[in-house]
Length: 162
Image 1 (cartoon, rainbow, N blue to C red):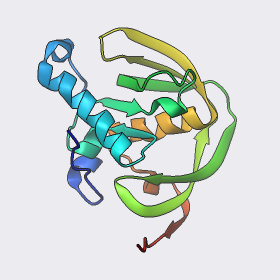
Image 2 (cartoon, rainbow, N blue to C red):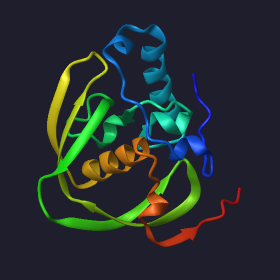
Image 3 (cartoon, one colour):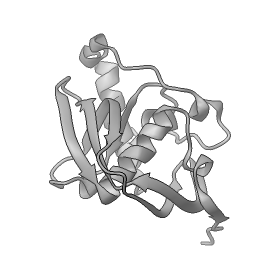
């Protein structure tokens, strides 16, 4: 089911999300919410999406398989944390489904280590670099109530014309 995407200034986008509890993994509604988030992300050509963007103040996000290392399946990160693996950072243009038609340059770490739990409750621990690292940092910011516009420089708006 495609979910409504919340847009700024919805207050849910500014809340710190609560961790997903072990009991949630066996909840059919939680499992369905993961599938719904993936479907919603794909319906809008997103590269990633965090639960708060769909009104769920829970610490999980999804990354489209096209932007993962193996490109085999969409990645689900539950209760993710990341740490920098290098001091190197890069500035690049970002946008967000929750801040439609706005873009700006954001400085992010180029290489990070990610620790999380997948949709099956299994621990995952991997390095991400370049664009994948950028996506993960952007989505984890959502889980902390931070939007890319809080960090971006040179913001600009593109008015879509049909």
